[in-house]
Length: 114
Image: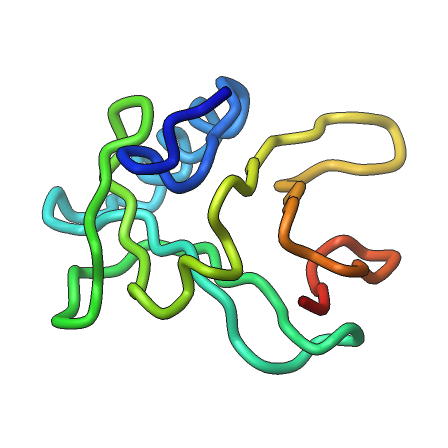
């Protein structure tokens, strides 16, 4: 069980490897963190936000496996306990989101309803 009071989300080892690779290849500045969030839209109501950004006033900052993670406080109710993984297969390649707060997800896995 992950302690969500200190780590609101879970990053798999393979996701961390890919995120660090992207940061290196894209020359992401040191002061940036991994922004994890939600926005309205997508085929199920909400879609996930995953990218690099600077910390903003409404953000909480966490450290997950050596990565600075930024999340708006209001998004935590949708994302608490979510696992982000990296899949590398014949048919699928990319980040996946396993969200225990989602009532249903779409087929593409990048949107959900809560």
